[in-house]
Each structure stands twice: as structure tokens, then as C-alpha cells.
Image 1 (tube, rainbow, N blue to C red):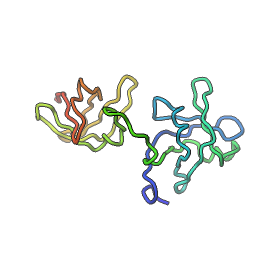
Image 2: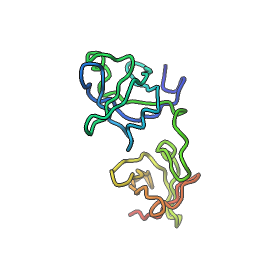
Image 3: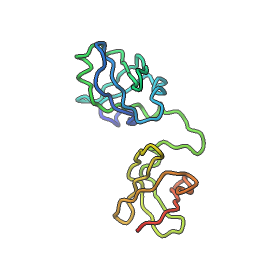
Image 4: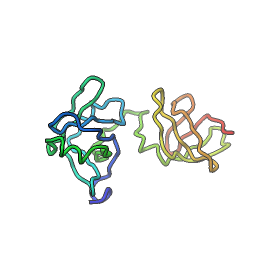
Length: 167
């Protein structure tokens, strides 16, 4: 099955190295709250084709988050999945409150300066710890704009209106 044949997959993290002998993985999450992954029951990986994995459990071990799937029960099985990207079906994402956005909804949006001096589009979003950064293509240049709503990002609607100057 291809990525778009049956489900629309959203990248949410990566399976790190196996932990222990029973098929647990260190979870490298693209989220501030990896324990929130427990609300999803089905995950997907691309291992010579798309494979569905059913969640067994998520737990904390110190600062690390561990994830376990029903069908992976040994370290030798887990080694096959090490360092693979982890996806969920887009249809399983919860609705967000007004004013909050998934990255997937912002990537590709047109970016316009509030004074109409430039426009471009969002190529990707980069996490920095303090706040995310819009990586935009503007006038054939890569421009980084902090994703700070109300300060640099004035409005998010059909387009993203920004208060930002470029050189």
C-alpha cells in the first residue's frame, strides 16, 4: 500500500533504538507531549512498504518516552524498525481550539507582509524550543520568520499575514 492509497499519513516522530528485550523503543516524538500519543491506537511505518502497528503501551523512563507495539515482542524484531519514521492517519488528529494549528495546515500557505512589500509561501516549520519558525520561500530566498502569533504573525487565515522585513 502506498502512502496515499488508504490513509493520509502525518509524521509524528521516529522510533529510536530498542530498549530492553521485549520490543520497546525509545520514542523520538515531534511533539511537546509524547505521552499524548497514547490516544492513538494505530501507527504506521514504512518498512519496504507501509505497515500498521497497534499500540500496546507508552510509558516514561526517566526523561525518555518508551513505546511498545503488540506485534513486536523481542529485541531482534525491534531492530528491524529502529530509526524508522512513525506516522498516524490524519483522520485521527483531534480538532484544535481556535487559534491553534497543525504544522501540516500551515505548510504551503501563502505568506504576505502586512505592508504588501513581499509575498511567498511556507516551505516548512522548524522547531527551536522557544517558538517554532516558519521557513518561507520569498523572492527565491529562504526567510525565517518566528511563528509568534500577535507579534510577527498577524493573522492566519487563507493566507498568513506577517509583520516582518526582509533584506
